[in-house]
Image 1 (cartoon, rainbow, N blue to C red):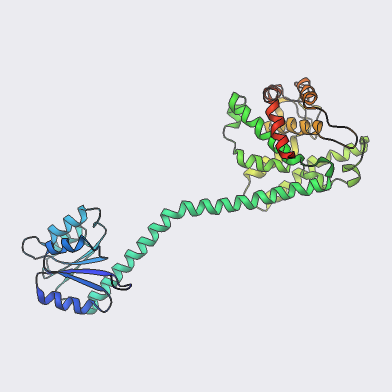
Image 2 (image 1 turned 60 degrees about the vertical axis):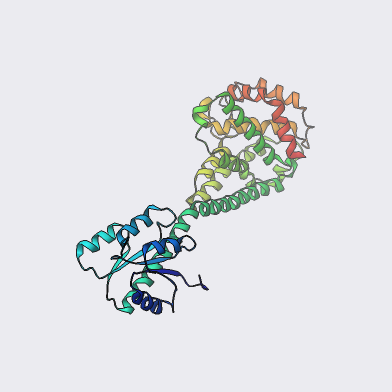
Length: 359
């Protein structure tokens, strides 16, 4: 192709028509001429044009026969074909279009009309190509956009969680460690088939993001309580318990401002129910047994393990084995017995995963 001109092959058994046609088209297009269908196919071996202007009445092989061969070959089937013919019957035109031609122009034709029709069909072809490219890449574009949104979402979640840790600085990497604990415990539940009917449809990726907000309500708790180097009084503990209500309220405010609700649904459950106890003596609602959402029961195990094994101003960290013993003995009172059983099976892995956060 010369420069950026598109290639058009003009096929006609009349040398005069070929000469006139080439002169007319050469200003806008690169034009190759063929005096027969056979010569056209020879040209196609080294050049695939954007369009073929094809005469119908030719010796040896007519235009109808030629277009059938073109359309049967995957390499040439997409080439635009316009019939140029002296045949004026409607049946002839219908046959040409049914064989795959995009247009049917009667000779002698008006040069401006021919040029405009060629321009329109080439433009339509370019637009179809662009649309096909867009459709082929749409999924990739959506995935990239979604990935970007999720990265922003996760960054915001992490930042909100870290805001709590900056205030409650005695807990260190509590949010990240409990996130790892929830992940490992979920993997064991799936492996063992425990609560499988309930967890099989969970979006684990969003779930693990959302559990970073389980203590977000602590942002409203006074520093004197959060950082008190000793046991809380009854009034102080009552105020501390408010963080579950406040956490729910914060997340509900976010829900009201967005159409995205899946990860916020998980976050609200974590924030509200991770201090409920299996025997009904927990807070904020005193839920008992299966009344407690499974996500809250899972977080309770990870949350308490990290609290036991972490240093506090009022206590040294418990050794791993001692923390496992305490949680195991609390199965059926503080914790869901099935979750405790799952935890004890993977206790060593649980510790390893949390230790990687510390490192």
